[in-house]
Length: 122
Image (cartoon, rainbow, N blue to C red; front, side, top):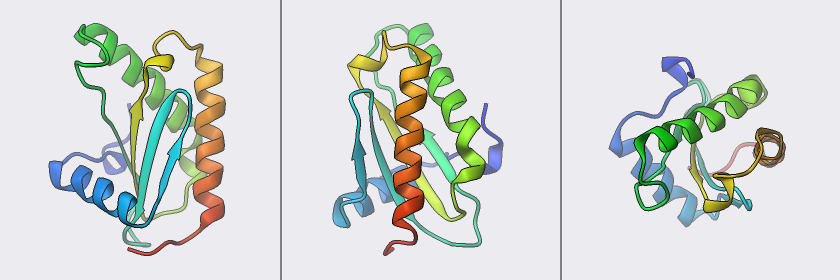
């Protein structure tokens, strides 16, 4: 599990990330997930949220397992992300059967893209 300070939790936060990422084209698409991000406050810690609906997986057990996989991948690279980002990750159907290593590699590439892009508009 991610530390509490690094978790997106409110609906407002998720909606704001979705709106700002669309507005400023701050989205990364992978075969295994969609990643939307927004730069908020440089003093605040980076916060990450995961959205897995019942349309993707009916079973709560399977949804929670997939969340654990993605959380583990993000936790490994959390220290590499600069402060001030809100990130939402939405897994795709291909991630259900994908091995951890492939998901982790794609998450690493996405995080590098975020770090390279640097500070963005808010």
